[in-house]
Length: 299
Image (tube, rainbow, N blue to C red; front, side):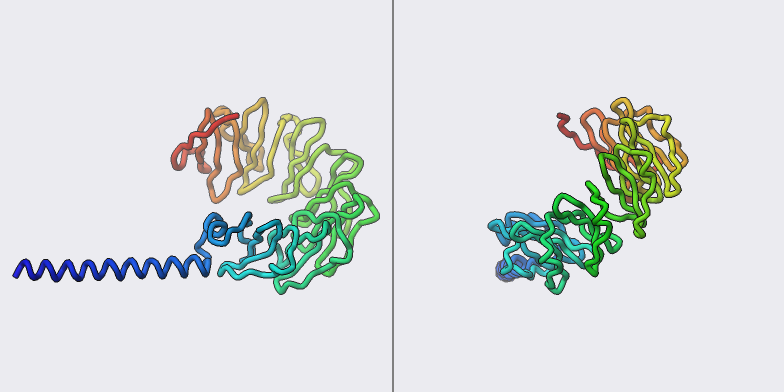
């Protein structure tokens, strides 16, 4: 009785194994063919033979194969492959920049092409807050989603995206800010470098030193002579002096300066990655280590 029961059990087990294997094979084929959203970039490249796959943005990703670019959605459906764009960029605010025959223009998610006849030399940073920087004949300016061009006659050397209602621009080697009405701010200060506003503050530099300004133009911590800074994120900003990094808050309090980190990244979701003595790890807002160390190679 025990032998008969054992043989029956083995038959069932073998049958179950074959069913399981067959199910897995079918599932893998469907998975590979449909390219569901769970697939990461490496899987996409391998399954379709793409040379390059961008990250998904607004449910679309740019891909490239055989020197041509097009788009896919999260189900793996391909869009506008036959147009043979030279390059494609991510969607932002419903529009994406593409390049063909050496010139740049935009498309929307229905595939409609915009301002192709203008033959822009370049388009930078996509649309943000309804405006995008473009370049033609070595002059940079802005366009909106209706195609209106702004401040082309000013002949800025460089313009950056709007963020929190302000954008930074440069002319004659110096940087300053403009708002969406075109008003220029702090041009006379002749900053060497600036960043976009984030959380109401922007870093600027002058004479090789970094500090911060708010939207009223007040300057903060200029006397500290930081030799590097990054913008605020989650109420904290990275600064550097004498080769070491630490953090400051919006009241100017300095955090963990004595630890002499070799590099710090901005806070995101309550954590920041830091680097010291060939190791990378995360700290929380209290400065406590979160997670494990990762050994890195220092150049």
